[in-house]
Amino acid sequence: MTEQTLAAPIDDPSERQRGFSRYQALLIALLAFTQFTIILDFIIMSPLGAILMPALDITAGQFGVAVSAYAFSAGISGVLAAGFADRFDRKRLLLFFYVGFTLGTLLCAIAPNYHVLLLGRIVTGLFGGVIGSVVLAIVTDLFALHLRGRVMGFIQTAFAASQVLGIPAGLFLANHWSWHVCFIAIVVVSIAAIAIIAFAMEPVDAHLKRKQDKNPFHHLISTVGQPRYTLAFFVTTLLATGGYMLMPFSSAFTVHNLGIDITHLPTIYLVSGLFSIVTGPLVGRASDAFGKYPTFVFGSVVSVIMVLIYTHLGHVTLVTAILVNVLMFVGIFSRMIPSQALMSAIPDPDQRGSFSAVSASLQQLSGGLGSVLAAGIITEGADGSLIHFDRIGYVVVASAIVSLVAMYFVQRAVAERTGKRVV
Image (cartoon, rainbow, N blue to C red; front, top):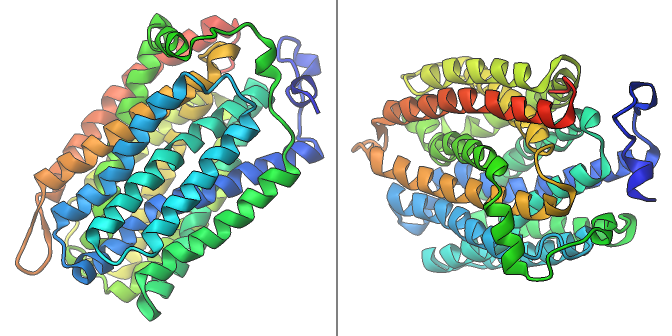
């Protein structure tokens, strides 16, 4: 099946593809399943924080380093991979990095101490950090712009599914057996995903027919040096800041600051995830129907309000904690999905892989810096509570406001490039 049969042209509204073919539906499910394992591997560190810190006898600062190690190594690998990202079949590229990611997760699973776990997070980041950019390049290659909101919406349900299925299951395994078992489970699921990619996915190589720079370094430089990509890279950097600052410490904050018993953490993630599974596709449809930037504005407003509320909470009931988390994830999804769909329309076809790799690299590096910054802002009280957590909220809100303004100019650039009001 070729690129032409997968992505209907968007120049003629009468020829616009309305739904997905059977293979497209299979491909979306496959990419979402792949993202499920990648996202789960990263976010499982957050709820495991309350278990890992006492189990390995480490501080909140050391735990922040373990989380950011993934981000920094992913950022480095993104830059290294950018020069080669458009020179191979994207299916083979996805398989290569996915196998490396699985091996890194296996190292985390058998880690006997903090230092080996840290090494495992670095290896996992080196490979796993590039996979998201490969997935984005595949979506951009195979789906027309007017469908990408829905595609991104379905793929991002992997984030919600990792909460509904992965995090509660991971916490159950950690509480009843060991935190090592959580990573073992991810390895098993990842092996299944590798098999599906190898046998069910068709090559994605239409971009190889286009003229390309033979020198990988020159290809990287031409992508980074492209003036119209600069604003997109800047927005990507800002968007990563918030999640990496709040997420690593959310479980510790929920337990020690909100007064929620650790045994109720799976319930919070389960309910929030269930709502997110519904929200993702709806946000995707809304971004295609009403515009990607208006949807992004809505998500930004909700995110700002809920972050300010969340970071200033004291002891609350379980119902309140769940409600706040649900609304906060609605805001996050309403920013994440339309922003990715908009960004996908920016690069030229022969630079989609390198553009996505550089974007992923910036996202991971800025996220790693955000995690380290957050660890430097907060301190632990004698009772384990996190002090100055509200200051992290102010930084997140400031980055959200700036990204809202910057994204306005991104959507204008996309509209001018496409010659249509598709954004």
